[in-house]
Length: 139
Image (cartoon, rainbow, N blue to C red; front, side):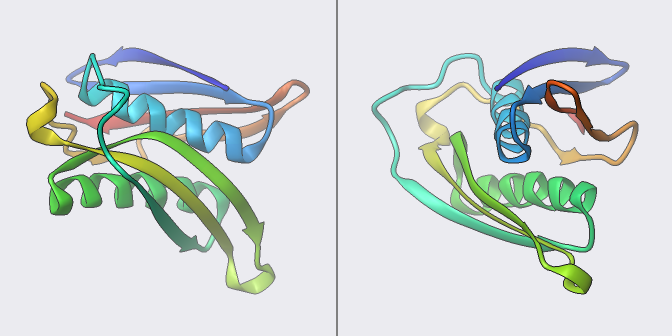
């Protein structure tokens, strides 16, 4: 899995790829962390879990990233080193994600504020090589 930060007008975008849906979700989340901070300490912060449900895969990606931004603000800690354990389709109930991340206290990093995830130009698609995503964040 990998991500690339891209300039986007007054915002920042993350283009990500992964062999699996879980891998591309984790790569986009890592891209969100990279958009927020250049250098992340490797030996600081505890892991925490994240559970999200939504009506579609795209909404699940949006809600996952939105939850990470919310948790950053509430916990005053930057989520990094994302692991998406499972993404399950629940039939008529939508989709569910189970993930974890390491939280680094904001006073340990020089963080830029990423205000929100947007649906603007959001793309999530399966390819012959795996999965690709493109997400724009409001900064």
